Image (cartoon, rainbow, N blue to C red; front, side, top):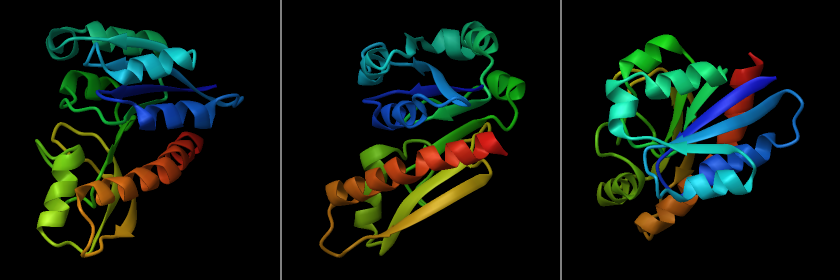
Length: 188
């Protein structure tokens, strides 16, 4: 049985999609959701789907081995960042080399880096009159959005699109492709 741990900071639609995609599978299971936000809706979504859900603070994540020890105890085959906003600490990355991935709501290397998440990305895409955007699934390293690319999917940005329109298109791409890419990685 392959084991997935998801890190998320917000509402958790990608996390919920992953949990449902792998529900009742014999070979893959989402075993835990971890969040840096104790009030994140993702925690409620996970609990409703009978997945362990815990929150942690910055000290437990970056300054101590508390979160690392949780991960060691659950022994995930893949750690999936799904709307997780904190930079991943090197001491965790070193223990799980090439096992931490992220989905970014743009075609990296464009619109990546610190502060480039969610609506900030979509607003920038529209403000710069981009004609296309998309998602990038990539490995996580010690720098924001600079890990090796795994997969990209694109969509058109129309002249009439606003940031909300772009967000909706990105959400569709995430829902369609993210679980499939995770599944492919686990089957390699």
